[in-house]
Image: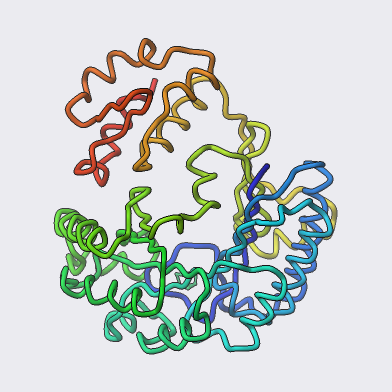
Amino acid sequence: MAGLYIHVPFCKQKCTYCDFASFPKEIGKVESYFACLYREIEGRSKQYKDTVIDTVYIGGGTPSVVESKFIMGALRQVRKCFKVKDDAEITIELNPGTVDEGKIKDYKSVGINRFSIGLQTGFDDQLKRLNRIHTAKDFLLCTNLLKGENISADILIGLHDQTAAQVEKTIDLAIAGGVSHLSVYALTPEVGTPIYTDYLNGELLSEDETADIYEHVVKYLKGKGFNRYEVSNFALDGAYSRHNMNYWKRGEYIGVGVSASSFMENRRFTNTFKIDEYINAVIYNKSPEISSDMIEGDDAKFEFIMLALRTADGLDTAEYNKIFNEDFDNEYSESLRKKAQFLERNGDKIKIKDQYLYVQNDIILEFMK
Ligand code: SF4
C-alpha cells in the first residue's frame, strides 16, 4: 500500500514567501507537462508493479489553476495504471479565485473527495502583502462551492505585525467555511524569496512572538473541537489526513512530476526542480530523478523516531522493536534519560509533552546517532 503525490507546478503569480516549484510564466507548457506526467505515472506503475494506492494528493503550485481536463486525465491515468483502493482519500489543493462550479463537479466526477484550500490569512491587506491572488471573501465563495465536502485550509502565522486576535479571526473564517481540518504553518523566510528582505529588515514577527501565537492557536482550536494530531495539523474527529499520516508513519509513497519525492523499497528519490529538464527527461525515456539515497541502518531509525515524535500520538516502541529488531528502551536509554522532562510515557508509547511539541527539534536531535 502506498500514497501517490502528483505535483502541478503552475500558479497565477508568485507569492512573496514561496520557494516551491511553481512557475507562473510557464503556464504555456501545461499540455506538454501533463503528457509527461501521464507517462511518468505509467513508468512508475511498471517499476512498482502491484502497488495498491491508498491515498492520492494533487499538490503544487496551484492544481486548480489548470483546466480540469488535465486533473481528470491524471486521475484516470492513475486508475488505469495502478490499483486504487475503493475508499482511497483523494485530495486536491485549491486556491480561492481559481475554481468554479464546473471544475468542482469535474473533480468530484473522478473521485476527488478532499479539498485543501490555501487561505493563509483572513485579512485582505495581509493577503495583498503576500501577493496572494485572492481575498478573504473569495475563500468563502470557494467553500460555498464545496458545501458538505471534506475541506482543509492552510493558515500562516508569523506574518508582518500579525496578532493572535487576527489569527483567531482567520480560524473563525475557516470554520465558517466548513473546514474539518487545518494546517497551521509558521512562515519560513527562505533565502531568495522577496519576503526574506522583510525578514532581514525585522518586519516579520520574531520566533518567540510566532511561538506565542502558535500556543494561542493550539488552545483556541482545542476549544473549537480541533485536535492537534501533528505539530502543524489539527482536525475534528476522524478528519485527519490519511495521506500525511502515511508520511509520518514512514509509509511508502510515489511522487510524480517536477520536484516530487518518493520513498519506495527504502529508497528516497527526488525529481528535478526544473520544468524543461523534467519534460526532456520523460520525453527521451530518461529518469527525471536528481537524487536517490537508500535509507537504512541508523538513518532509517532516526527517520522513524523523528517522524513519530512530531505526531501527538508519539512513538510506538513495540512497533520500533518489531521493525528494526531492536530494544528501543535499551538502545536509547541515554537519550531518554537526558530528555525525560520533555517526554511522556504511556505503556509502549512515548510522546513529546504537549507544551514542548512546537520546539521538538532539540529533543528529537538527541536521538540522532
Ligand atoms: S500559491 Fe502556493 S505554490 Fe503558488 S506561488 Fe503561492 S505559495 Fe507558491
